[in-house]
Length: 212
Picture 1 (tube, helix red, strand yellow):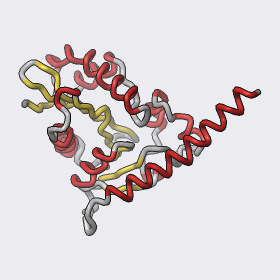
Picture 2: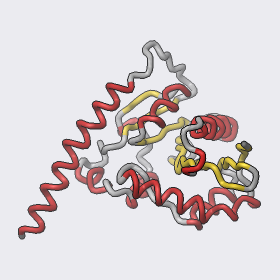
Picture 3: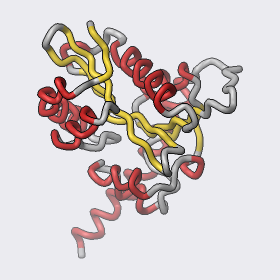
Picture 4: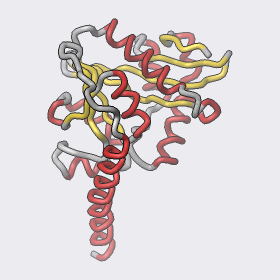
């Protein structure tokens, strides 16, 4: 398995990357923003992406975005092709893109938002900590990227303060002490509470709209 910084020669994989992201979004139904092949091509062309290949076969992908005059860096579009899941590949890709970010943007804070417990665990092991959305970038371009997520209305209803996603932040200037082991049960419980709270309101709004 080869995991490398993507270059222009990898642009040919943009279509399958986009389709794999779309398919995963449909299956999970939450927490994944769709990305067009053209958007993926731009990230690959700028040297802000990592790709995993098994020979010539696409295996996984992740890209970097910068916000707030490059004060914040986010890793987005982390995806593993179904043929290569459950092999620890997501963690290897995430680690590679994390190292690339630290090297390319050494003075930036690295953050992400996700509903995936597996991604939360990887982030925690890299030194991220859960934070409120107020500690993340206020750059509207970042939040605009959530518009293709099925739960974007939740973000709007909470004035961009909360959603089904959990915000996680790595600040290289401040050492993150992992005094406690990763608590998947607590994060899983938090996720269920959010889903119950926000999706219930969402369904109530739909019912009210249909009746009117």
